[in-house]
Amino acid sequence: MKYAALLYPHQNIRYRESLLKITQEELRMTLQAAGCGSELEARYTGNAPFLIFETEELLRDWQRKLLERVAGIYVLFQMEEGGLQPMEPLAVAYLKEDFPALLKYKGKTNEMFTDAMMTMALASSDFSRVADSQLVVCDPMGGKGTTAMLALCHGYHGISVEISKSDHKEATDYVSRYLEFHKLKHKRTEAALTLKGQLGGREVKFVLADTQEHFKEGDTRTLRFIQADTQHLGSLLKPESVHLMITDLPYGVQKGTSGKDRGILQTVRESAVGWTSVLKKGGVLAVSFNANVTHRKDLAAIFEECGLTALQTANLRHWVETAIDRDILLVKKTAER
Ligand SMILES: C[S@@+](CC[C@H](N)C(=O)[O-])C[C@H]1O[C@@H](n2cnc3c(N)ncnc32)[C@H](O)[C@@H]1O
Image (cartoon, helix red, strand yellow):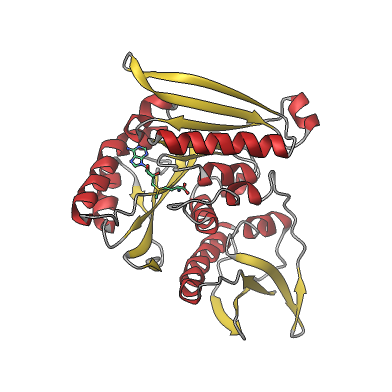
C-alpha cells in the first residue's frame, strides 16, 4: 500500500527545510517501530511538502495510531489509483493541542519540535507497543513546561523540573488558569521539598482528568512541576519511574558562549547519573542542544559513562535562527545493561 504524509507548512521558509529533515527521521523511526520499515521519498507539490512511503500490507489500527504521533504530519493520505484519500485520525487527544501552545514566551521550545523529540524517543524505546498506556514523561530542564503539557495531551503523566522560580510560577499559574477556564476537574497541591535536610525547592502537583466522570472514577493523570536544580533529580523522583525523558538544553547564545558551554556541559555532567537512575530500563532520553555551543560527542560521552547507549540516527542538525544550529541526541537505557 502507498501512503502520502502532508507535512505542516511553516511560515519561515528556511525552517521549513529543517522541519522536513526532522519529520523525515521521525517518520522513519516510527515506521520502523510499527514494523513496516520503508523507504521515504520527499516530494513537493507546489509549496506543500509530502513524504511518500509504501508498506506491504494495509496499516493496522495500532500502526496508524503510532503514525499519528509523528508531530510534523498534518494529514495522512492513502494513495489510490493516483488519488489521495485522507485518513481520519483514530486517536483522541487527552487534552487539546492549545494547552502547550497558548503560553508564549521568549526561550520557549517550539511545541512541534518538542513533540517530534517525544515521538523519536517513544519509537526508539521499548514502549512503542504500549504507546496507548499511561507512560511517564519527564523534562529535567523543563522551562515553562512545554514537554510536560504535551505529555498530558497524549494521555501521559508529565513531570517538569526547572531551576527558575519565576518560570515555575508562570507555568503553574497558567496551568491553573487553563484548567479552570476549561472547567476541567482537578486538584492542585503544593509542597516544599527537602533535600539532605534542607529546603531544596517546591513542587506544585495537579491531579486531573479529561472528563468529570473519569475524575470521579479516579482515572486521572498527574502533572508535576518541580522547582529545583536538576542535579538533584535522582533524589526527587523514584528510581526507574520515567519511561521517556525529553529536554532542550540551554542554547548558551548570550554573551561569552564558550563560558556558557562549559556551564551547560558541567550541569549535564553533574546531573547525568541522577537522570539515568530515574529512567526505566528500555527508556530513552532525547536531548536537543545548540550544536554551535555544545558538542555532540562530549554530550554522548557523558551519558555513555553512565551506561546509556547513544542511538544512531540520521544527521538531525538543523538551522533554527542566527547562532543556533540545533541537534538531537537520543540515548537509551538498554534492558540488558
Ligand atoms: C532551552 S530552556 C527549555 C525551555 C523549555 N523546553 C520550554 O519550552 O519552556 C532550558 C531551561 O533549562 C533551565 N535550567 C538551566 N540550568 C538548570 C538546572 N541546573 N536545573 C534545572 N533547570 C535548569 C533554564 O532555566 C531553562 O529554562
